[in-house]
Amino acid sequence: MRKNFKICCLADTHIPDRADNLEEIIERIKEFDIDMIFHAGDLTSFEVYEKLNKLAKTYAVRGNMDYFYGLNNFPVKQKIEIGNFKFLLFHGSGIYPRGDELQLYYKTKEENCNIIVTGHTHKPTFKKFKDIYIINPGSTGDPRYYHGTFMIIYLEENELDYELILLD
Image (tube, rainbow, N blue to C red):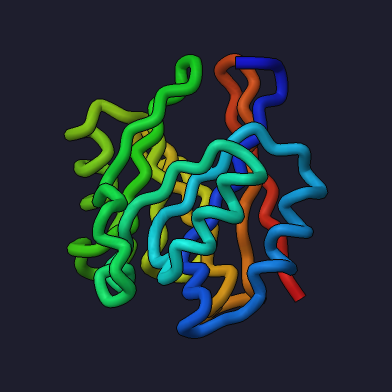
């Protein structure tokens, strides 16, 4: 891992079923010279994955809405290790109530990870919960609480930080 490793985290883009802002998202991501992209589900179009993967290596998981758009080849969860960081990428489907921190905590621990990147609530969250981090970049295409959002995660040795990016 190089110094100042940057990951763009997205979720709930819902393109084209609820949004059509893919070009705006791509232009904003280009501003950050990222190393990798995590998409925590509800892409609803394979085109989203293809275009993101042209920017940087993209890991994506299937969200609850992806079934309806034929994106069944994406895994439900995915583990990615970067240095000392063990990420679990998981949309959050099946967690009730949505975004329940304790259930996300147990899911993360079951996978032997220390960070979960999740979606489903459409609400941006970056929080330490017990001994894990819960990261939800919000939704770029169907925000329910804020503007459309995504996050840039900064990794450096054992440090983790973030920046919430607001879309117009």
